[in-house]
Length: 172
Image (cartoon, rainbow, N blue to C red; front, side):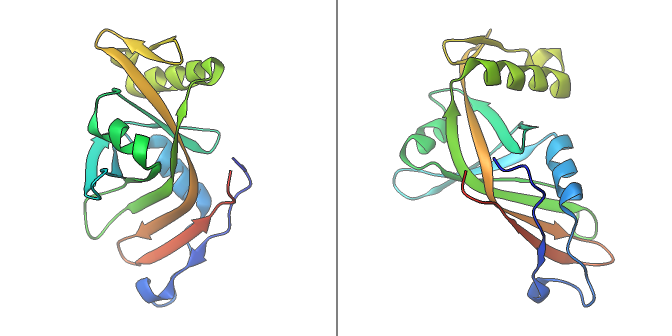
């Protein structure tokens, strides 16, 4: 992914008068430190599927893992488009961030080891994964790892000043 800092575009239709675009560095920090994300995928029959998960940010992409038989893994087999969201559930504070992109299964072991180390560093020893056969291995079985390089990211600022900022990324 291109690691150049994208310029934010303010959407004045959904922003307070006089609001400024949110800086990318703030959205990036939110993605890096968020504990919980929500992923939206599409079932083969077109119905949406949304579920919480944990994820890590590495070199500008989000990484998450899931069991091969879980609904989100089955959905991504048929349609790689997905959305990951994180933020604050309060109406008058915080920054919500929405990442749109395609989930690509990761099998390269050097990057898998880096992602596994980030999981353990961010979430603790209970999230330790070994890397085996192009996936994460742990006591509960195998977890497939997916990378989502952002195509478009939205930031929704709430509080004294509301704003909607959009960042676009070149295709990876």
